[in-house]
Length: 175
Image (tube, rainbow, N blue to C red; front, top):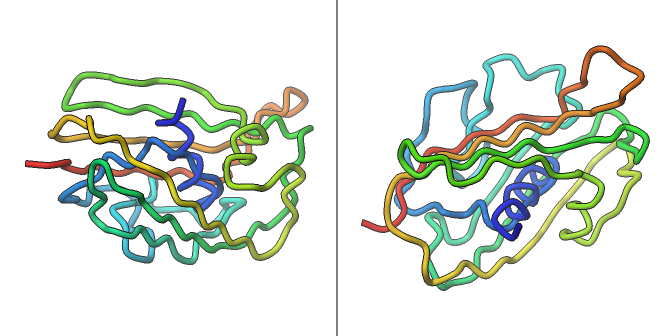
């Protein structure tokens, strides 16, 4: 779950952030919806993200690329267009692949994961800043990793889900 915690940390940095996402190394941008501003390997999932609840202004990783066995500092700033409450049942769907092998496919409760960046729901509308340091394990195998993290509201009363943000990273670790 540490792995998904880094993704949520980056997401709340991009909305949330999870801690294990950082299997970065020599990063490579993937094709998608454009680069996330800042010093990071993140891209938006789609070209059109103007309707996202979270507008990411900047996400910085230090060091970039991250290094196995060393701390990774994540700093993210953005703006929420509305409150995120427990009633939204917001989730983050996370898929991590090593080459073509799926390592992780999970759904994490956003309000539970946000506690890992010392926040809690409701997350109030307006400017948001997240700073989190995570320790990366020494044992991260070298290779190409793909990460997809999609944060949405999951309110059962609504047919259509609201997109909070969706981010991807395609990176090479070690090598």
